[in-house]
Image (tube, rainbow, N blue to C red; front, side, top):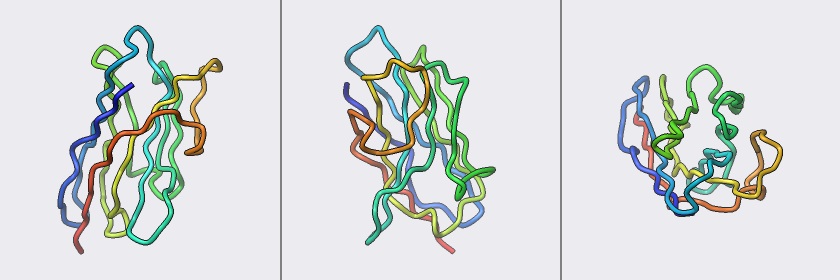
Length: 126
């Protein structure tokens, strides 16, 4: 599975961005997906996750109410809508997929994912 994340950029505090993660390869199946981020000098942290169908999602407390993960399985694409952005949201955002899924749930931990995209930089200015 190849994942390509895009949609990052520079935005002022309070603004919005929508990240996209397009998946290619191993067609015929959809997989649980997640978004993580890594700020300079910090460890990678969980942002949001979604199950195969898109009916179950989970968001980190730090983004709950501001960010929304969603997916369009017909397009093999997962989205992260980011509203009310804050300077502390500045980071490289990564999408990930878990192909070894048999439960239909979502996953919160980075080590549970099998494939990662290259990351897209989000910079929020104050």
